[in-house]
Length: 220
Image (cartoon, rainbow, N blue to C red; front, side, top):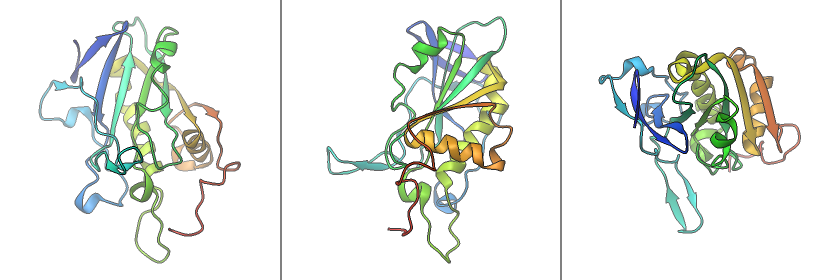
């Protein structure tokens, strides 16, 4: 176990794991199909929170079991960092792939902390809403569009406010993604509302200009 100012995490494989940290209010009830509402660590009623358990995935279809799994209450992130640092470390924020329909903050990233933390980099992975909950568009109806991308922005805002508590430098954030995560990175590079939330980008196998699943001409 390892303690930080606002929570308790795990120490394993030579580094700290802080799992299931909420970065936004649960997108339930009146918040469903709406942009995320951010939270601060300081907002929590208890000084120490238990960040030692994996959060639920965002709800998605499970082909193995032929049904849905996960939860709508899924806006959580994970932080991996060295237990002690003499100065703030650069940060990589990982966005998972899965055609904006599948995956989680644990997808495609099992070895990422091991590779980067040994190079003095703090790692953040995150969930974002998927499928219709994250990307529903109905022309002529008052549904907020691209909430999955807005979730990613809110997670980046959380990083700017809080990552220094975990040894990360908010002025040295690299946004990194694979497949749909890479396409998401390209959207954030293009979108002026993401300006200042990260300072470098790595795109692996995807761009909104090059893949045909990132746009839908029909809502169904």
